[in-house]
Length: 443
Image 1 (tube, rainbow, N blue to C red):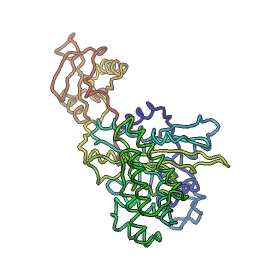
Image 2: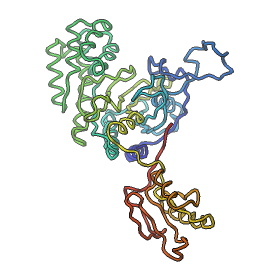
Image 3: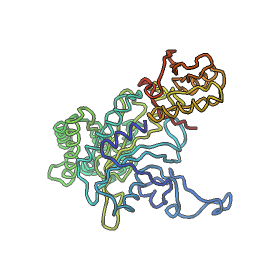
Image 4: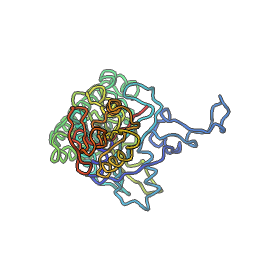
């Protein structure tokens, strides 16, 4: 799956980078109130056992909890060498102080794509990024993943509407609206009133906006103007002007995405994304028939995360929680992991005196890109076949050095189907479904 994602990302011109696992606390805290998620590090010699380290968090170091913070630092440090806009992909482990449970891990793999500009970044990247992710997720359907759809919103649209209603705690409203799918609209209404200073009418209007969806830009504009009219938001107000910027961008995203991949991106105005550094478009991605899984890929536009003096590096990005997605596919989508070894063929060894010939056969196969292993011992043939079967290796190669087959051609047996044929080490290829697989086994 990692190879598949990397191939799609590079097909679209993204450059792969890898960053260190450790960042400064000051960098990690740039994304807002995330200190509870950060694994802070210290050397044993720095603290006495049992004592708390009272060094401020921003002066300590910790494991990165996502790949956006490392990207922002990387861009600033290498700004003199980077060609902007900088399109990067990154697939690495991250760490969060979570309570381990199904779908939530303390250590997991994320797959990110971002485009970062120098001073400015054209809006068309806000269409390109979700389309690249849709392409990547479409490629993963070969492993049993259902169809994915990106749901998009725009922070300016939401903020303008909330301000037009007279609400001032915009970040608070966004945080509560982001909880609709988890706790339901009734509980969100209570939180808007108790935590954000909204009255019942304002809370109801916020939920009306969140309930709005649109398949194209014209429908979005019409529905939004109707909602503003019903709640007294004047078209000549600053709040409506701000919201209109968001409406225009979101309409552009939906319409241009539809021209390339119809139905892949829809407007969904309950998408809020709780993190406070997003400044424009925000995205969540859902799988058909997997509502309980929630969003499997999220992100948005951020204009202020990376800066150097007066210079800002705005960006837009999306991230897949790959470990969580793999877990779902193995346990729910009926995907199968049938291979332990990446080898397509195990070369048998008749006796230890003949191991050199088996090694030559394996070398010839590898030279043509066929993953091959050699039996570890010259055990009875049945044991060698059983060894291959335990590792999921589909073929066993029999060199022509068998005592009763002197001078005969090599033979290869498909231990899945039982078929056995003569084979030439310089011409034989495995069937497509048994070709080389890259396999990683976790603990």
